[in-house]
Each structure stands twice: as C-alpha cells, then as structure tokens.
Length: 264
Image 1 (cartoon, rainbow, N blue to C red):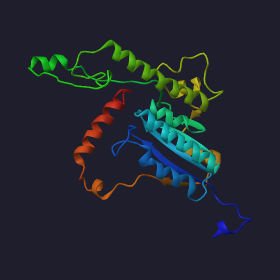
Image 2: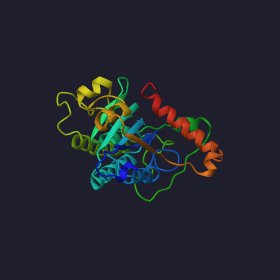
Image 3: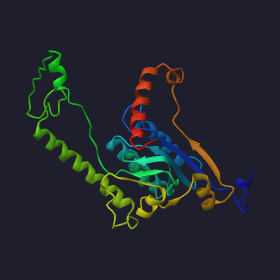
C-alpha cells in the first residue's frame, strides 16, 4: 500500500541473477540464448535499483562470454541500472569477462579471479590408430580444411595459424578488461598472462573493487531493508524428469574438469 503514497519512502529492490557454470553455446552451458531472457527480465521488472550478478564460472566460449557481457552493458545503459558482480568460487577466463561487464566487482577472500588468457587443447591420436591398423583418409578442397586433425601428425604451419587466432582473441579480451576496469588496474603487474589471483590479491591488482558478499554489500549500499528479487533459468519439463540424463552427465564431467583447473 505504501508504495502508492508518495511521501512515504519505499525500500530499494535489487535484482539478483546467478551466472554459474561453464560458458558454452547450446543447452548444457551458460549461454546468451539461455541467460539472455533472464537478464532482460531482471533489468526491466519492477524498476530495480541495481542488478547483482552472482558469478561462479571457470570460463568457456569467448563468443558467448562477449554476447552475455554486451547484453549486460546494453541493459545497464538503457535502463540506467548499475551492475554489481559478486564472485563465489571462481570468475576465471570467460567468467572474469562476465564479471568485468559489471560496474563494480566484489569477491570472497578465497575467490579465484583472472586467468585473462585463451587456451586451446586437444589430443594427438596418429600413433594410436597406426598401432591398430587404422588408416586415416581425408579429402579436402582448401589447404587448411584439415587443420589440426587429431589423427594426423601435427603440422607446424597449423600450430602457427592457431596461435595467431588465439592471440587475436586474447587481444579482444585484454581490450575488454582494460576498458571496463579503466583507472583501476595495477599497471606494475602483468595481469594478462593467464595467471589467477585470490581475494585480496585480486583487489590489490585492480581485478576487483573489494571483498564482500552480495547481501552485505547491497544492504550497505541500498539500505538494510532493501528487497532481493531472484531471477533464473526455468528448466523444461523433459529436463525436470531426467529425459536428458546422459547429456547432463557429460556436461557435469566437462564442468568438473574446468573447475578442477583452479583447484576447485
């Protein structure tokens, strides 16, 4: 009732969105297609005073990271709503890309932040198939169509091409962080070599603005009585009844491997 009485002060509302898991296109990971509608609703519904992003991601697709980050910035600018990122276990690689899309970043004392780099990993199986009498037959139109085929011996020219691609993506990542954290980064530290920093180290390096947890920081900023409204992705009927159990298990293994890279 009091929200309709102009001379009574109403409590502030903070919209909360969780960005958790490996970032990838499709149904298994955190993608712009999945989280986009959630972000649109969080920024638009009920005129929030701020949007709080709870981030727990080891990274993943650079394109999906960029799409989600760009959507966060567009909505923040359009709605004139500030964005705060709160890192739980990890905001590394693409996870840090998402955190950097916020106006301010906060972390726990043991949170892992950074890993501003790009990685590509694979296997070489040419000796394995040779031992088992398997012959690889590949026909292409275009000299680079079979680049880095895992069943063929590694070609130095292919490796050089891949390194060029990775360096270009790395440059885009660096530009994003420098733009979003302008005036905050410690110029005396090499922050773009792929290393991570923990809690207070991340704050000292300028990768985060402070140590703190979501409700504490938001109540300090918007009042003890501020309201929290949580938004999330709704699972479909098939997902709720385990119809895609095999796909879910494969995704869980992939996610476990990514988090394990940071000792988590």
